[in-house]
Length: 200
Ligand code: GLN
Image (tube, rainbow, N blue to C red):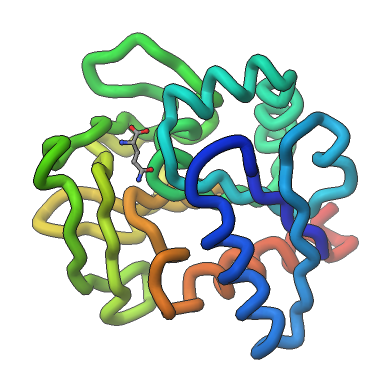
């Protein structure tokens, strides 16, 4: 199983470390590929879009000719996990902003929704069926609208901060900056399921 981690900007190392940690404790042995150019996408079974700066990442996707190939892989069912800036890249719409990135996830997202200075904090809340998941927010967005039956995975203080829609998971927080492997393990299970011949 080959997992691509977009590695053009931002907190991609943390995701790679998380996958390495998981391969020590799980039977699924993901091979990690850092995605920096089009050919890195060859043969990946899943993709992680890390946190960072979504405007810069969006521009780099175009410059490196990664934008269209990634968009079409996601539209064709490639499992994808987007965290923070990654969620912003996936979102169909940005609140009060005409910018569109990949726009494959039917949600509206407010960038820097907690304010730029006080926007970093940590709290515990459930994510889907996982109790007490540590949520690390860093200049985080939240989701202001969920459309087309996208499933809400996580809410903090009445704000939606995690969703799942078919092959896509979008989180406003950073599971890769915790010791809790449950979300990455869940994502790998999703990738494994998509790899089964009957689901191809
Ligand atoms: N504020 C960043 C953005 O808008 C996201 C922050 C993050 O990924 N930690 O792109």
